[in-house]
Length: 119
Image (cartoon, rainbow, N blue to C red; front, side):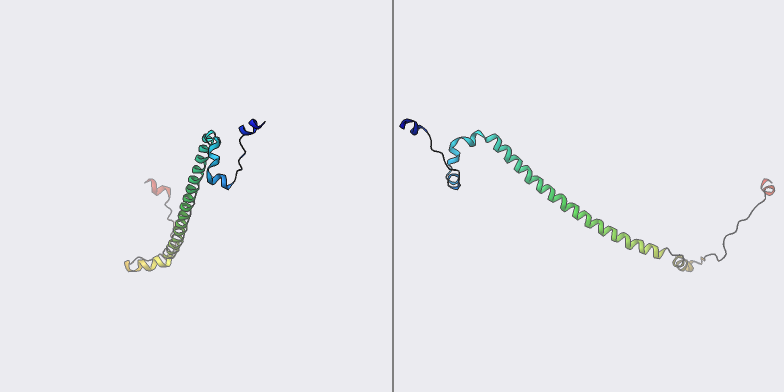
């Protein structure tokens, strides 16, 4: 029985001490699971990269939204200027120096009889 006890390896405790000392690397479990661990590391790298991509996209959307708000504000101010400048009284005042006046009488329709048209 004493021979069996000597061949059995004592179980190591998983803790900070075994992690710091590197005892867990000697079991061979890390080497056996190396493909899985590298896959997990790849997933972590992709997750971090996606986080940076999402942050940049949100930042770009925010920048474009601010630009859009600024352009909308500029559009509103230009529409106000256009409305003010396109008033009939404003146009009439601008054309007075060219001796162009607005008509006081409404336009009339002149009917020409068909007999005169055919001649």
